[in-house]
Image (cartoon, rainbow, N blue to C red; front, side, top):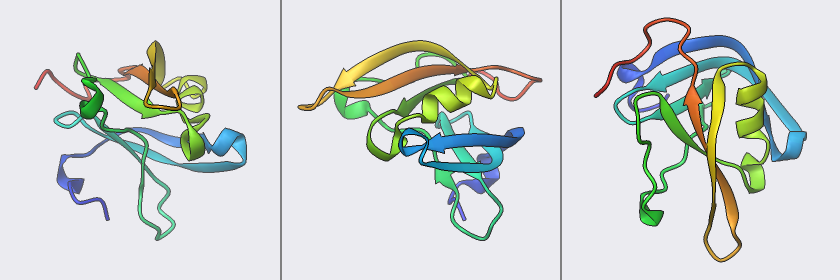
Length: 120
């Protein structure tokens, strides 16, 4: 179980998220923690939840506004950001290329369906 479960708010259900260039798709409930800008996919299959966001503080990148997230879009995370956009739960803000391999990270803004978070 995700260690900060009490902070997580369900923002969308039955969302299909693609990983590894579409070779794996998991479907579940998206949970968002507005205090940490963490987005988690809970597949409710007894397995640990999948954290969809990434901490890029080492590169000086942080979510800039409430509801903004940073998503890894390389390796097993490739395709994750686009699947959130395709599901209608996020909008593209920007992309960043990081590290020695210019790995791609995507800055997304979650689309509010109702009052899901507030400015911390």
